[in-house]
Amino acid sequence: RPVENVAPTAMAGMVSFRCILVLGLLAGAPAISTRGGVTLGANPIRRVVTLLQDMQKKVDAEGVRDKELFDKYMCYCQTGADDLAKSVAAAETKMPQVTSALKESTAEKAQLSADLDQHKKDRSDAKQAIAEATAIREKEAATYAKDSGDHETNIKALGKATAAISTGMSSSFLQSSSAGVLRRLTIDMELSSADRDIMASFLSQGQGEQTGYVPRSGEIVGILKQMKETMEKDLADLTAEENAAKATYEQLVAAKEKEIAANSKSIEGKTARLGKVGVEIETFREDLEDTSASYE
Image 1 (cartoon, rainbow, N blue to C red):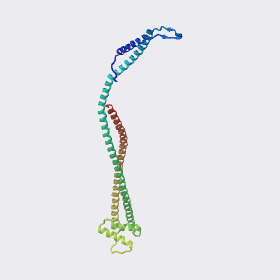
Image 2: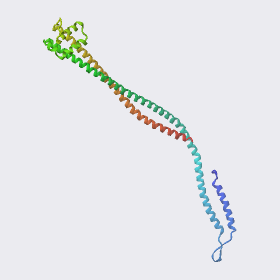
Image 3: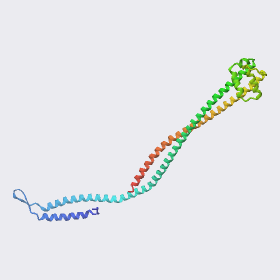
């Protein structure tokens, strides 16, 4: 049954009624016999008083205990409602804050994931660009090595021919391998028809062929010098193109390596941040559940 607000004085009145009833019963009781058949005239009033005093002490102790319980219950009723109201108010204030923080962290996590995907793609693209540029550069370098080698060989052959003719050693030159290089150049290089005919007439002497016109050495040397200058200019142009291509490649690689390093650093930092945000989200969710439970 629910605890009722019963005053201790009312309970004492009930005890007094009980005591009077016990006193009446004891007053009509016979005398107590003792040993030897002798009746001792015990005072029943005294016994009742002693009994009543013991009962009164017990009732007083129970009354104190009941009052303490009653006071505690009343205190709980008064303070419990206040504590509950404060708890509800705190939860109502905290819920929107936690919800907002959870949304922000969830949005940040999504953004971090998107950023990481982009950084990884950019880093991969940069590595691919370096690989492609390296393949092209290697082909260009190989082409330059062959072309520059051919030009150097041709320049040397032209130099030997010029020196041989200038010193009157044209016959021995026409029997050398450099004469074969010179024959090929007179066909491949851009020459006027007159110069080509003069060179063909000169070179035919080394093959035992006789022609009606034998060019003078001065004409041959002039054509050879012109051919050598043209070849040297072509080689210089090839070298300039090679150096420019090499510089462009090195600049591209340097830029892409910086891009790779920057993306790697971003990936490392945002990966760490993504882990922390994931922990924050779980913390906010648990906090939200705990706060929601305080309403119940």
